[in-house]
Length: 383
Ligand code: ADP
Image (cartoon, rainbow, N blue to C red; front, side):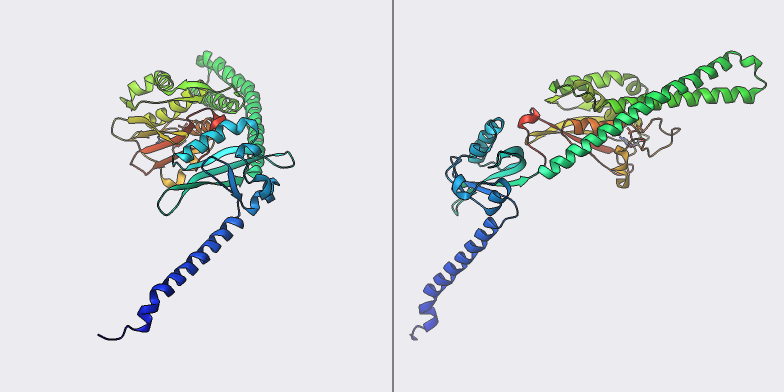
């Protein structure tokens, strides 16, 4: 037997030392990431008491580590957020990662800072729960920008409302003079003159329709009625009633999965469904239109889908179609004003959700929008 070689005798111990050094270095790196993290991080025990916080917590909220360690998060949350904090804690204890919850933190100087936080369970190498981590984002600047934008949008819509109202009178006058002329058609010099009068009437009618749509659009923001519990099955039925003539004439079939009840404004949601389903029926290809409405729960949100088998939309126009007066086709091909999807966007955003489309030319379109599943006070934001 040969003498044991030096290396193989020493290797278990030196390996262990090397491994420990590696672990230590890794721990140091992780501690640095934690302490110097760009966002406030709070580590809590499984009962929700704060074990540690990083430097950003003091910078953003003013509280020192010493003031926070051992406290519950309620200590720094205004009372209206306490129930939500309990709910998030419970869900983390069950192992759920709770993402992007909106809340507010009370700073040491007594101000309130809006935040977005993600909370999840930390486990050891055996997967046993050891603590709960909260990564917190200060969203005050985002909220300020959002408020400014909302105000600006409101002002623009008010302006649009005023303009469409003021233009209504001259348009009605043009229409009524043209109608008068039509009454005395036989006194008009020739067919060309008669055609021109008819043309003026058609244009005035179309202009009136545009102004009415614009007026409705401008009113969407003013309807700040409190959100009530709205059964989307009933909303859908109402939308289908309003569309029954188009569905009948187009030989369209509209099907749906069970739909939930959500907090919302019923008449605006009817309009939302009606615009999307109506477009599915209108922008048809050769086959009879087939529109399907469904909803799936995604954390604190419902994601609705309205899909059709129509002409589809080129991905280049996915943003454009949600703009006011933005259309991809001529009046002759498909009548419309280009206000429908813009209204859908305002309605969904007013409900705190998001709307988008997936499609390809000739492949049908799938419109998605999200709505909160519960009252917005206790909602979670989107990823
Ligand atoms: P309108 O229906 O009055 O034209 P919308 O604002 O509802 O206006 O839609 C804007 C444009 O987006 C439409 O003109 C059309 O080009 C496109 N579009 C909307 N919905 C669909 C759909 N389901 N399939 C294909 N194109 C669509």
